[in-house]
Amino acid sequence: MWRSSGFQWRAKPSQQRAGKPLPKAKAPTRPLAGVGGDAHGKLIGEALESGGVCVDHLSVLGNVPTSLVVVMLQSDGQNLIIIVSGANMCSWPQRLPDEHLELLRSAGIVLHQREIPDSVNIQVAKA
Image 1 (cartoon, one colour):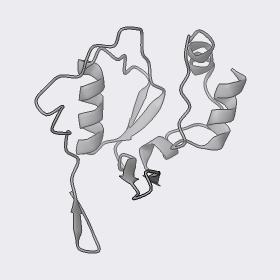
Image 2: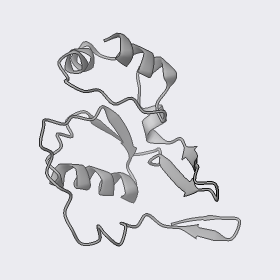
Image 3: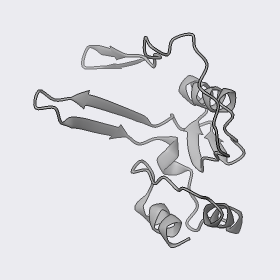
Image 4: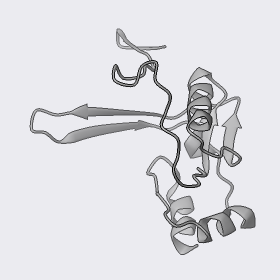
C-alpha cells in the first residue's frame, strides 16, 4: 500500500478476475522485463507463471520497487495514463545480451512498452 496526499493505493485484482486463475498462454510467451523484489513483483511473477508464461527472462531487482501504471478514464472518454518508473526502467543493460536479441529475432510478435528506456526499444526494433 502506498500513501500519497491522503490517498491509499493497493494492488487489487478486478472484481471480474478475483479468485480466478489467468488463462493459459496459447503460444510461447517470454517477457523481457523487470519487477521489484516487493509484493507487487511477486504477484506479477506468480500470475505470469500460473498463466503458462516463461519467466526465465524476468529480472527481479530486490532494491527497486515494481513499476506502477495507473490508467484513468477522463470524462471525454480518453485515457489518462500515469507511469511511475521502477524496476522495469532500471533493469536494462546498455546493450541487450545476444541471448535476448536472438529471442527477439525468433519471436512471431514483439510488444514494445513505454515503461522501458527508449534505447532498449530501439534495440528491440532493430533486432
